[in-house]
Every structure is written in C-alpha cells, then in structure tokens.
Image (cartoon, rainbow, N blue to C red; front, side, top):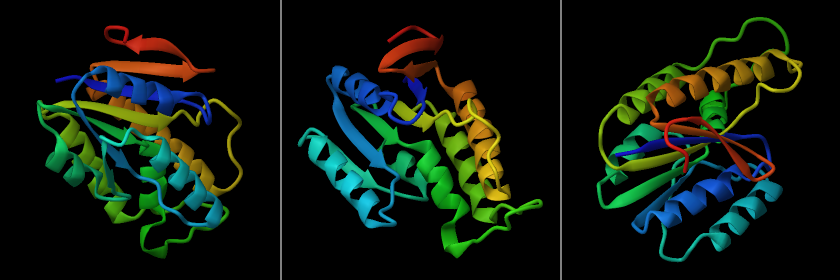
Length: 185
C-alpha cells in the first residue's frame, strides 16, 4: 500500500499529475471528488472535470464523509484518488450553514474535528493505494478576515498531518513535480 500526497497551488498541475499517477498504476481507479457546486461557475468546473476523466474510472462524489468513503472503496485491486482535501476542508467549515465573524477567534464546527480525526485514522490503515490532492495555501500573504486565516491555518495543519502519514509527498509547480518525501514517482 502506498499513500501519496500531491500538493500545489491553484492551477499548478497537481490534479493532472495525480491523475497520471493513478492511470499509470494499471489498476482500477476510484476518484473521490469533494467539490460541491455552490454556484454556476463551480457547477461548470465540476462538469468539465467529469467529462475529462476516463470513462472507466468510478467517480464517487463525497463532500464531507471522506474517511467513511475511503474505507468503503480502498482495496488492493484499486487506486483511490481524492481530489481535493482543501475543498473538503472548506465544505466542513461551512457545513450546516456556519457563518463566521470577520475578526476575532472562530470556533470550528465539531464535525470538522471528528471528520479530520477519522480521515487521519483511516489513512493510517494499510489498505490499498491512495493518492490525495491538496492545495498549498500558505505561501502567500496572511489572509484578511478570521475565517480565511482559520482556513489557511487548518489547511496547513491538515497537509502536515497527512504528509506525515504518507509514504510519498510531492509539490507541483508549473506542472513539474518536486519530490518532498519518499521514492520519486
């Protein structure tokens, strides 16, 4: 079993790289998509991604219960590709219609902590190959607004925790991989 984390900025080529890794495995691919169509533009993005995936890949759309979904689909016969952890994080932060103040400390929803812990526990299990895609959002300026800062903080913490459990980690910039951990892909 190999767990691989593929990090990068927006439009860095991280998803395409992760998809090439999954396809190169020669095994069945299950694609867990975490995006939700909150508006028309995002709905169009999701539709385009669906069209671009190979027809033989199984797509499972799950915006919140990622650990449970991983547990259901992981096996030695397949590769599970999760795209992406930062969208999943955002979904959890705003699940149930949560709203946040512009300034001051924010309390994260209880479900966030529960789902995060469940994901890390699931990734520690030795079942099947998993490729996880996540945005690196901590390379820019400190965001304005409490919820934006909380999101950046939690994305960084999540990426660190997932990277610690993964066998391989790569950073993608301009479509090019930089090996951070493990055997280069």
